[in-house]
Image (cartoon, rainbow, N blue to C red; front, side):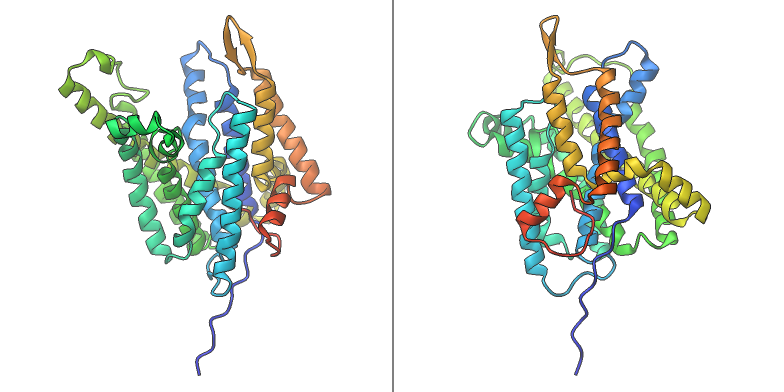
Length: 374
């Protein structure tokens, strides 16, 4: 009689993935509160922190889901219970994100509620075969940005935004974080874990594909109308109907191309962190682990660090020349240094992040210490 398939043991924390997630958090800090500068070169550098950290964050969130569902050997028992735990976490994230927006009013877009929605939608897809998860993720990533860009200009979405369903329209189409874009990135991260991030050949292939995607697609997107290297074009309002439609389609295509390239950058960052902290010579691993330990600690408690940074930003809002702002290089530095110090000390002396521990308790999760999907 055939034996029952064994239940896989979830993997322990992977420092390379945590380090990549920590870098994504730092990128978000820069994007959120860095002030405007006159230098085009510095402006271009700051622009790197706009979209890529968000996609890197989503990619590593998918990797977290891959780890807690069994990594290369997906769990065969208790799938319903695991889905229930993830669903509870997702609902808590939605409530937390909306609560922060309503009470603190930080001058940044908040991702927590969108991530909660994404986790709920991913529940039926958690145990897709790795090839299917990767294929669906790539196809969705190629389609979703263009679809969202075109859809948000339609009368239907405009009407929804003005109705009681405006929040739902923002989640899926018209907001800063269309949920299907993040689902695509999470599926790719989940698939990479299924292929085995402990295998240097898998990581090397992923890095090469990611580098190729970034090198091939980002220059194309930059040269298209609306890209940062393209010549300026007239405002859409000044164009005729046909020209506006053509420009809208071009912008939609550009966004999809750019998103694929930016996700490629994220894959390269994860691969680089794994190379330094997992596959390099022992002395290199030790030095990298020591130098990156504050960033790794940040990445091990992303919910706590992200939420605390929203509170700090909300407390830093001021009025300058009649305009409410929170931009400040001092605040950028304070967020980075403060988050590193807090996370490093907390992880060293206490362990799991405070909100991560609370989320674990509220969802009823009692497994060994494994990466959180948020």
